[in-house]
Amino acid sequence: MRTYFECVGCLVKQAIEIAQTNLKEDTREGFIREVLRQLSTFDYSNPPPIMALEMYGKIRQMAKINDPYAQIKRFYNNKALSLYPELKNLVKSSDDPLDTAMRIAVAGNIIDFGSGNKKDIAVEEVIQNALNAPFTIDDRGWLKETLKDASSILYLGDNAGEIGFDKIFIEELDPSRVTFATRDEPIINDATIKDAEEVGLTDICRVISSGSKAPGTPLGICTQEFRDLFYSSDLVISKGQGNFETLSAPPREVFFLLMIKCPVIAREIGAPVGSFIAMKQGGFKTKE
Image (cartoon, rainbow, N blue to C red):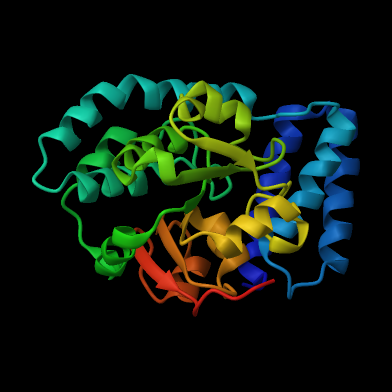
């Protein structure tokens, strides 16, 4: 997916927010000017997460803070853990545990600060809605059929907190066949291996870094180990908008699971903001 003009406003808004939160007043102007300079020369055929990678690299350099969102990420990891027992009971009592767990995972995608959300996200309310809401694009049937013969599943994680809800879904997928991929280092509130450890994902399945330092999965900057897994896994499940932005025209079939949170993604997918999406995209597996 390319970067659209509407994405520029979103990126500038993010830049202002992180400058106000992480930089001293006398350095904020220099940072904003640098971001605007980068935006003026950025190749808009690239997806927005590539620009975000450059922007957050600059904030780390200027503020000397490796993880500006560390506190709020921990807050939502703990939030997911506190809801875990209740949500597990919901899944166990469901007529279709896999589907209920999938819906809970989609609801967790609301925890996204790249799309403008803040700390007052009504996670419980979104979960309740997700339990009965229709999927605007619904390829769940394809997923269930594919799962019957899939011995290896690559699951692309998205945000901290959200991955606690992914854990519930992975437990229904059979963790022994799942490899969960995180970002390589902190960027926005995207999940890293540290976050996976905090919510207990590392206790149930294999967890690796994709090698991506961007808030998405651009294959060109991922590790060879990850790319090998991407092409060789029987099934790839991709969570969230950032992964969709960087894999919207995948070189193999990918199952996208997300909530649409911005008009640009809505237009790209062809579904309204707020939609729940369970979408198979791409052709047959190909070698790199």
